[in-house]
Length: 194
Image 1 (spheres, rainbow, N blue to C red):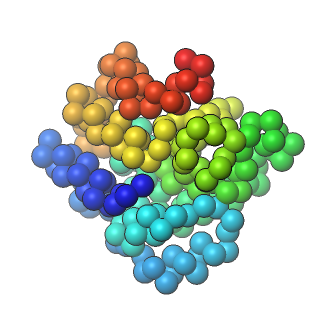
Image 2 (image 1 turned 90 degrees about the horizontal axis):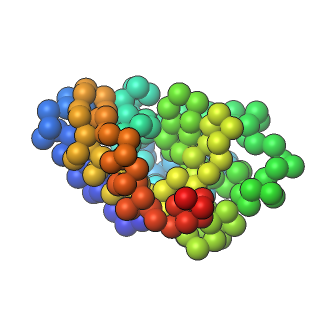
């Protein structure tokens, strides 16, 4: 997960080039002292690269602005609210061993309409061959979604390059979207048996 801010900036620059007015959506970054203090209260995995990312921008201000094609980038405050809510109402402690996850260690960084993307944690058992897969949850779904944060950005960037754009996101033919998703996340598809 090296230099996530630069990777996301690349996606921002591309979206500017295609005429999307996106600058007003980004929140200013947080201080590293505030971040350290806030995240020390929780057991979720929040690597140094995420500290750098959230000091650059604290997510986006509009949860309808879909930074990651079909997911909004949550501010730290919204992520923590989502984390607390999900720990209280979504995760059933008895099921967690069966699915091979420790949800208290996962950080929800993106969401939209009842779905969340979580940064996993080192040595998770759901996809042991992957260091930090991105896990999707919502509406009865708990599954690995991207090989990594970097593969998510590769996937999203390619979706934007081939998609039809609107102010907030892009639409991609379902078959082509699936090909691109598989191309950048082959291991996830193997884990899911697809």
